[in-house]
Each structure stands twice: as structure tokens, then as C-alpha cells.
Length: 116
Image (cartoon, rainbow, N blue to C red; front, side, top):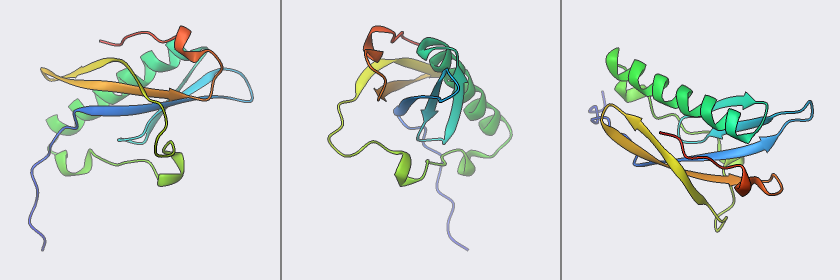
């Protein structure tokens, strides 16, 4: 049986925003393969940030630390060299995750809001 490695919370999370055909925006947190859809970018960002915080804290409180980091498949990650922007942070049990975002949405940078 392989030795268990201690859980290490990443210091960053990458969120990709994509428009939906039916309207709205989906925010996909790639380090945890969590997604949320909102009416606009700010709404999707707020929802995925809450999902990340809840997911990590629930996992830690229930002793599932080894299973928390579950990255999205490689097809969902932006290509190497993609311009990522720091858009805020998410606080997890007194530790901050720096949020990096990328988007295929026109003028998405105008809608970006920090998440605390």
C-alpha cells in the first residue's frame, strides 16, 4: 500500500469562464473540477467561490483530505502561455487561495470582481 501524503492546500486556483448557449456564464475551478453557472460572470464567480470553499472545508472536516485535490481533465485547462489575471482570493480556514482567471468572453475583465 502506498504511503499517504499529507494534504497540501494549493496556493492558487485557476477559474475558466465560458458562455453558455442557453445564456449565462459557467465558471470552472480547474484544480478541483468544480463548476457553477450564473446569470453573468460576477454571479458565476461568486457561486464557484462558495463551492470551492464549501468543498474544501467539508472534505477537511470529514477526514477526506487525500481526495480533495481532483483536477479537471487536461482538455479543460487553458493552453500554456494563456494570459491569466489575478482576480481575487478565497479564504479557506485562515489560508488564502489566490484566484487566477481566464476567459473567452469579450471584455470579461470589466466584469471581474474580487472574491473574499
